Image (cartoon, rainbow, N blue to C red):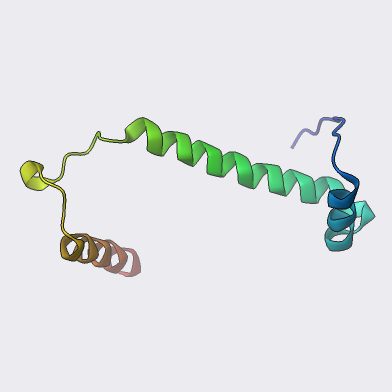
Length: 81
């Protein structure tokens, strides 16, 4: 993994909290992990927005709560098989 140096300006109180959790020698890794998590979440959000409405449910009508629950249970059972 190639690293790059950057300069960030963060609130003093936030930096103190990071140091309490990661230690002063663990700052970079802690911040990198937090940023990576945020990037993953933001990309997922964009993918969800981009695909909104692209799936048409069977019959062209929204599923009922019972249908959604059954579908989720079916997906979960496939994952555990």
